Image (cartoon, rainbow, N blue to C red; front, side, top):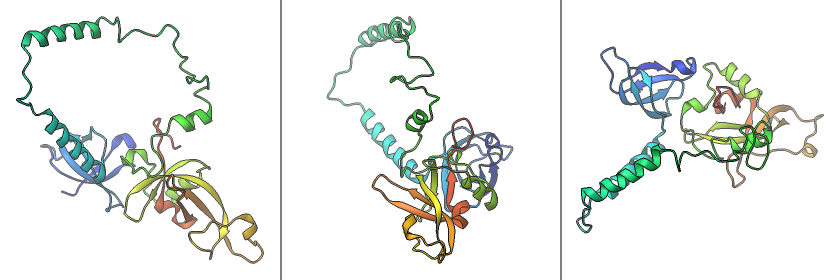
Length: 253
C-alpha cells in the first residue's frame, strides 16, 4: 500500500498513492484505490494493468451504486424453474436470423438517405456555435459528483491553481470542493469586487457597495444546484476549493 503512481497520459497532473495488487515489477495491477496527492480525503477506485489505468475512476458513492446494480443484475439472472427451457433448435433458429440481420447490413447498418451534416445539429444550429456547445456538450449537471480526476484541471502548486481559476468566465462549469470532501459540479455565475469584511455567504449588488468607505476584493459567485443554492469564494481560496473542468480534447473549458 502507499505506492506512488502517476498517470502519464495526464502529463503527471493525475498522481497519488496507489493501494492494491501489483505485478512482478511492483506496478499497479488489478483492482485498487488511488488517493490523490494533496487530497487524502478523496479516494478513487479503478482497474490497473501493468501500471496503466484502464478504467474510469469511481468515487465511493459510485462504487457503492455499481455494486448494488451488479447484485441486482445477478439476482435477476438466476434461472427460474417456473419457465420451461426452450430447445436448442429454437435458440439456434433465432440466433441465425439475428446474425444475418446484424452482419449483412441490410437493416441496422444502413446509412440514412439524407444524413444530417456533421457540423450541424438536428435543428440546423452549427455545432461550432458556442451556444450549441454549451447546451449539448456538458458532461455534468449541477451538483454532480466528479466521476474521475481526469475531468479536472489539477495543478500541483497553489499559485498555478489560482491562475487557472482566474481565467474562468461566466457560465463556465467547474468543480467545487464541498465540506464533505467531495468535488461537485458548479457554474460560475458572477465575479466582481465585493466587500472584504462582508458576510461570507452574501453577494452584494452594485448599489450596496460604497467604494469610498469599503475595502474591496475580487470574489466569485457559484451556482451549486438547480434549487438556486450558491457559494461565494474569496480569491485566496480559489486555488484550493475550485478546479476548472477538463474538456475531452485536453483543454480547459
